[in-house]
Length: 158
Image (cartoon, rainbow, N blue to C red; front, side):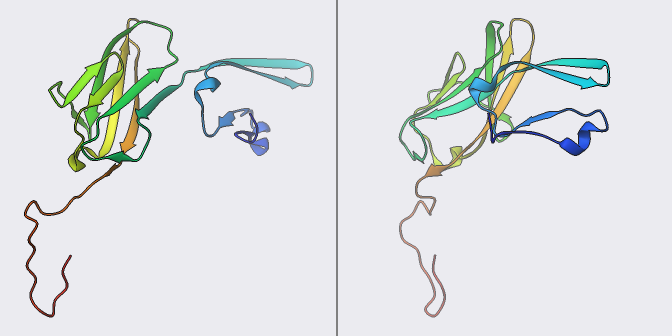
């Protein structure tokens, strides 16, 4: 896993034997065990790392008015019960524009207003709730609805 993994050697003297993984990948999910030997004493610790991913299809960049699919997947072992999506912190209702199905959200005609933070929240049969965020960027025209722009002579026009 090198060079994505590090241990802070200076923290070991204080009893901190934390492992840092950056960036985390889907295949990193699983059980991790640390064994620390000091003189004749051995300490052990087990930690399970769960990973959640949000992917987009087709891959970025997303073009305005071209359909896209946001998918949310987790390494959690229980059965998925519910998926909820949030756009810029607000719940996304299912409509003709937004269709949610088993961990995925289809946006049929993405607009510039759909850019921003998208968060999926997965709820499992064991009541575990896991969420992840994806920052969606959309290529398109974000100008006036009227294609005629007036500017005074001698001033700047955008």
